[in-house]
Amino acid sequence: MTTAVIGASGQLGTDLPKFLGGDVVPISHAEIELTDTNSINTCLNHIQPGVVINTAAYNLVDKAEDAVDDAVTVNALGPARLARWCEDHNATLVHFSTDYVFGNSQERLSRERLAGKSAPPPGSDPWTEADLPIPASVYAASKFSGENLVRAICSRHFVIRTCGLYGVAATMGAGKGNFVETMLRLGQERDELAVVNDQHCTPTSTRDLAQATAELIKTDKFGLYHATNSGATTWHDLAAEIFRRAGIDVKLRPITTAEFGAKASRPAYSVLNCQKLQAAIGRPMPVWQEALAQYLIDRARVG
Image (tube, rainbow, N blue to C red; front, side):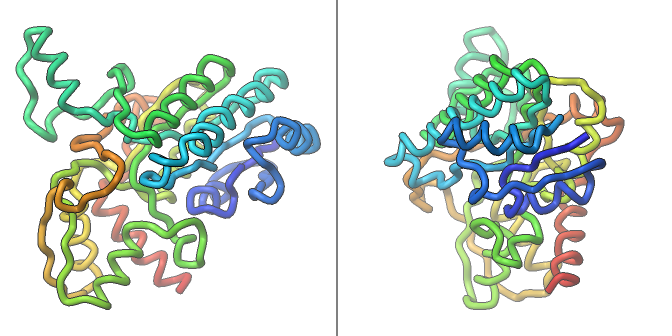
């Protein structure tokens, strides 16, 4: 079985081949253009993969608010083109999406109140695959569109929603960096940092996600999955754990999303329920604290 990994130079794309069996063909942006059907067909016709894994995305969340065409073309139409090729060639498509599709927590609470349910306290009710996403940004909407197109076009699909990825390839200049590396750098440069403390989520190690993805592919249990490290935190609390484990003495000040002032809306609560994945692969993913500890060990080795 030949597996094509699109976006192979990124953090997740770098980790995936470590866990995939068979012949793995890494594909860089220079070799395939998701905005061009001919480019996709030429590349994949040459490789003839049985599995196509798409890790490529337009993930400039704030810039996407103005670059709507770019976000939709890469995040929605690109996956649709891959799905069509896979369906026509009886291949499996693995496509990654985002927790940001659950952008409007207040809308969720309103629906639950209308249904006569009491609103759950924050952190008690992670989103499941059966919950209805309500994207609140262009980026999130483009990713949700991509999910739906893949699911509609390709029968052999794994659509995997995840969150806040970080991988050691970022230490070697891959991708656009990650939150952990940003905190480690700023912690050395500044005496005090202000970090958002009202966004609840589960940042995830690309190493752990890659391993779980490889295990999931072997099951042939196609469908939509949530896949993050276990547990939940905020960006402020993650930063505190990073500095504690790295031995960096810096003052952390919690701020709100409104105070941070990003252009695009972020979910206030996007913790994902991963029980479906756990049932499919027979185990949970590691808790986020353990994942972070392992990441710090791994980056020291490659550094």
